[in-house]
Image (spheres, rainbow, N blue to C red):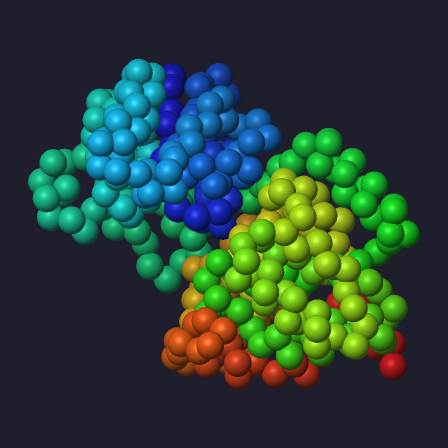
Length: 359
């Protein structure tokens, strides 16, 4: 039995497919299970033992290439997939590329998200299809396609993996800084409108370090805009946090998050990584719907999140949301007015719930 899973989306989206893949492995322990993802998502499945082969779609390279190179690269990637002669293909992406790859795979069973493109629909890319379900968590949306294929759902945990070398690097880094316990704050996202105010994060960082004497480690991707946002937050802090922004790979970041006492951040991939490691999360949400994207609580195996504008809880995790607001363009980039309605006192109060009242 050969099975291919396709998920051409961003890092957090791909991480939430690990539940889907784990259940495939449990039902087909001896099958060849492969996955195709965008190349910037490699870290999610690099050390995942539930898959046999990882196909990396060179999204950025194709995007920046001329038409001839695009065709050549697409063709080579397609050949890798068609050469495997898959029995089952699951496309968990709403886009057209996954639908076309599913069709051209010639797999006997092709399960996928019903396309909104009328031309693609006429091609009948799937033998089993349905629209992406609404009003449920993304983990549950993915698992819906297992149910359509009559495959049981046994395990509802989300998994994030890294190597022993990643563990060793983080252990050495913490040892060098004499850190036994810490709070991890990841205040940025590739989508800047998901970010909270720099002033708010600085106030929370100072509160944690002044009141609890627990060091705060702040992280971000190497992206220049994310680094600039972190630099501004740190410049506003009276008590400087430990800045590891742009210094860790995603797998090293995973090892760091696993060690954190508490994760505070916005709706981004590291938030989902923290939840996967059962690290308590305080997540700040604006325009994104937590019903679909809130931190998944592994121990409950279902989502408690609602599309509401208030503080809510699901197991060990917390989501703070005030209003959807508008997306505005400013000198610092796009901001969500809804995110700016979140009060620093609220974030501090929720932090106290985890750490206790040391006043």
